[in-house]
Image 1: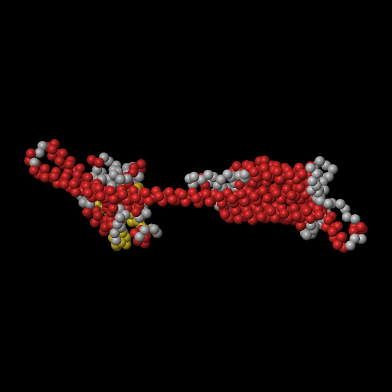
Image 2: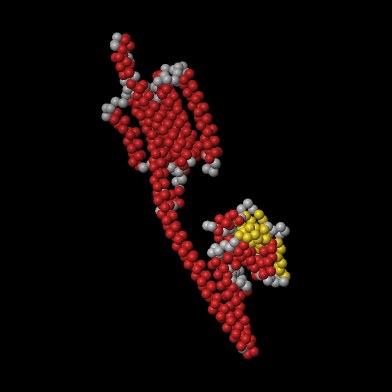
Length: 558
């Protein structure tokens, strides 16, 4: 699972990516318990005494069976222990596979595949020892040899799997990872089959038991060294690189694995003796530790999902509250802007009318400075009236959509250009074959009028050219309004869409600074975007997209 997911949600504490300390102490206690009990006199060995066949032959049939069963208790114990280990390994494999399908964590899949192969080798070892698979060699050589080979294979396959996880590319696709895993798995299957075939058909297997030596089973030193290396270096390094509960459980699993090999390499001198049986019991536990690691991972995942659901519910509740407050605030602000701009127009007109009357009454006695003041008063009141009109238009955006009509873009653009009464040196050019659109007439007309007006107002020459073009796209239409004016510096291109924003002082430019803000709000209302293209030296192109009729109809009914 994604270990960082909980960090994305406020108030959530990430779950510790390790097994609890109590689990570690429990593993150590279980691993040491059999040896300590044997020191206290508990005998874990199975009966390996020879059977007097002549004596048994004189016994009744049912007693003969009891004698043979009694003397085969070591083989039965061996089968139970081995098959229990195999079952735990297979359960871990199934759990790892299901965990992978939930989390897509490659670690569980790779280690699951390694445990599956190790379990299959253990199954062969068990079936061959019980003669359920035909084997040529004597059991006294077959059982210890196949045990040692299986243990070496187990250690190597785990080390190989973790090495594969450490070396695979983090950015590789899931398909690539699965292909690499499949190739590695098939190569391991081939090696496992070669080992099984050799062990089954060989009549003479190497001697692996030396009861009189300090190291009674030299072949078991190899997996012992491998497990020590994995437990002290490789697996802790892997846990640091890819921390997870399962990776931490693999580190802990090396404790019983090492003790298994210590019992076999330095303790076991014969089949089914105490160290032999203890080692086989601990092997079950070595497989069980990763199983419990996966279970703990599932518990953490469930707890994390529950906590995540609670945190998301609280976040959504808070978000809904803030959204309602924001909607209320915006509504009140729009209503205030609408009322204020509407109600202020009446006294403003009164001021303008009074100024005109004063000028008419005393125009013959006006001093030049007073005449200039009255001229400034007219300009300021006209600008304030334009500001109120634009503020009113801004507050009305989204209140009414108007009707969908068929609009000839070229004809509309030329009409708007004429209504704006540009200077004589200005011309507007439309691309050939501009489309006719079934669209909302009012908002599109407002957008085009403001953009064309902006291109005229901010031009720095007596003559200028404005170019209108439209391109059809799969999502709608892309409009471009280009001029050959002074351009807009890149650092100013976001700022110009704010309310009351102009690039020149108020006295040097005609307008309220609301035109582009109205355009931006209109486009946002229909989920469209606008961008500026200019090098800041000469010429500006305004690009905006406009949706299809079907999208506009759905926006109207939202």
